[in-house]
Image 1 (cartoon, rainbow, N blue to C red):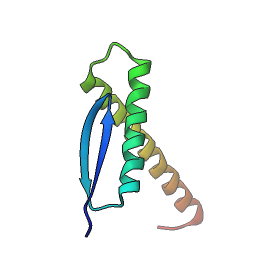
Image 2 (tube, rainbow, N blue to C red):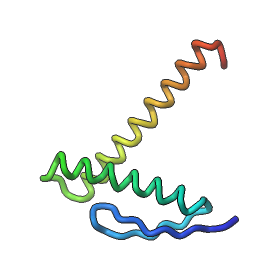
Image 3 (cartoon, rainbow, N blue to C red):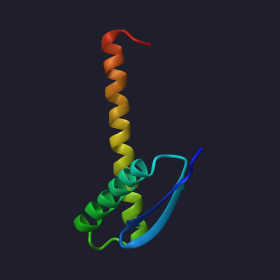
Length: 81
């Protein structure tokens, strides 16, 4: 397995991510996380870095859970288990 290294920024701080995935895929994920943290920071300027990251993580998890619910609902409609 090839390990990719990608530099990403979250709230202006640089991180190096290493993963056994395609570098372009990691860059997409990193960009999404950065965009989400920036949205929270812009909306709530009084929050500290940790609060911003936690709130962004909650927002991303909410999106994921909504997708899971949509998939489960579609499976129920089709009669899948």
